[in-house]
Length: 274
Image 1 (cartoon, rainbow, N blue to C red):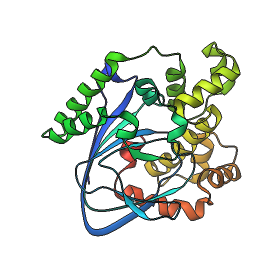
Image 2 (cartoon, one colour):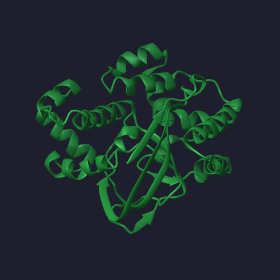
Image 3 (cartoon, helix red, strand yellow):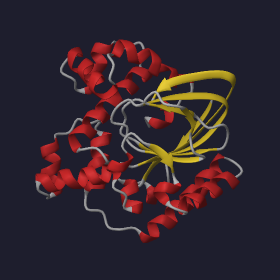
Image 4 (spheres, helix red, strand yellow):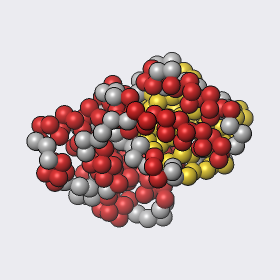
């Protein structure tokens, strides 16, 4: 697996967290893994064979050529990878899509849909620019130019973008009432604006970010005990983490982790959890 990841130009870092790309030749081998609860907003552009997705036990469907994937608040989908994988990946800031196109992000929770349904015809411009670029650096440059054009019509932030990014960077370990006070909004206003711009409520987003960071820590430090990882993530004890796994995944860790670890055969977390 060839995995690359770079930070965007500083002028774009309030909307883009990173650009990434991964390539692999799997042939007829099929890897499958669950799409776990996670806070990220992602744009995937397929330059090779697309991933296939089964949602809630339904039919297996190929991902769109360019897809927008919203935050995942619970396990609903199983991912299947095979053939020639070549995916250009854009990891967005938590409130980026709302800022760019004004979408109510609650409509994208647990969804991965054609980017044109979110971005309109502008999605075709992004797709064509990336597909016509000759290498990773050129694809990053093309995507940066596209975001630069999108930001020409940018609207002023109301603080939710900074707040949600801070909550994500802290892996969910920030008191929500502290964020409310710093925002200058009432608790009700903060809750409503955060949910609209990010998709999940502040509390749910914090829980999802913490859960996602815990899985990432296990991936990065496989020899480290779960007890240490769980405590460092901010859970009271193992029982607390098990309850969260039931809530966010619908399964106990013993039935979920082994299946989920297939994702690392593709090094996808190198991008998604950056």
